[in-house]
Length: 105
Image 1 (tube, rainbow, N blue to C red):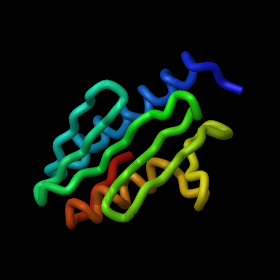
Image 2 (cartoon, helix red, strand yellow):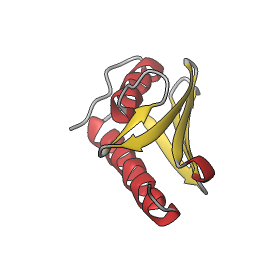
Image 3 (cartoon, helix red, strand yellow):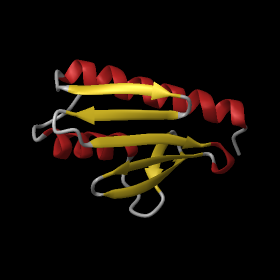
Image 4 (cartoon, rainbow, N blue to C red):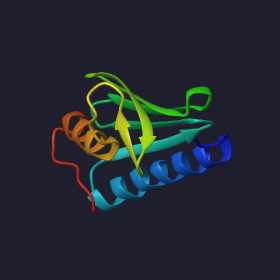
């Protein structure tokens, strides 16, 4: 089981990957981190909000398609309901909100 320090390092790394990936993608998405929350805002003013839930050691993502909870397991973040991998879901949700394919390596 991970401790809080490990959890925060993993989340910080995940959020950095998203911010760098969005820059790399060239999509018109604004990102802002405030405290434990990363907000992605799109041209149409819609948002995706990603925040860390320290007590549960989970990442939560909220978008117009719903709310998702992710746990870290075997080196990846996975949705606690669907099992979908975190970054795949972030890219899919960004693409839906942006109205164009948003992808990064």
